[in-house]
Length: 279
Image (cartoon, rainbow, N blue to C red; front, side, top):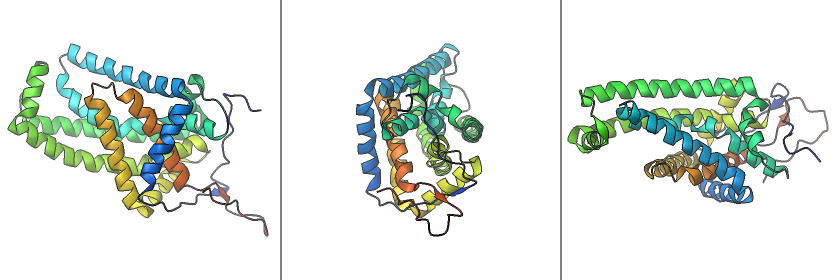
């Protein structure tokens, strides 16, 4: 039996082609159901990992208020959607281990990025660039709509509910939504693929874009579900994130599994049958 913290990866994409499969608009609901099952199979590790991210969110929020930077709260909360796929690598590792009959562990989840460190780091850097661009853009929009920085929590709430605040949320939400969907298209398949196999950064992004293009209706629904559930976790003062993040992380693994077939050799031996696609 393979040790619980050791799990071999699929072969390098230099020798294997990526086959993208079509999914129906009903699949996102199946992914959520599969994610729930994974979370229930490893509740301590799964929810514990989600709780760790939740506590980190609490700490960042407390630091913002302590430093009088509460006006950064909304842009950073929205930016969380951009970098969430990289934070979810631990959940991908858990689902992958469950798939192979292994027991997930905190150590394996935290070190999941080491399975393909350079390529996962490049993906993380890409999403961080999106995040920093969004924060800078949100800062400019905030200055355009408000001018003065509100002080305290009451000032932030009052500014947000004002006419300028509603306009800021609508305009910023539209721009942020476009940016978030682009980041989603780049990462929805690429990040779990990089955890699963020794693919390159560019091959993984290409596969992700192809998957979104071929399954646009299902991907629009999936992106909306990811955003809505994550926002629900944020507006509950992060408490909901401890359950929502594991659910979405595990579900995203199953989305990847349904859209990307098992690796097929680019130059198979003549007469050798290709491995069947997963059901």
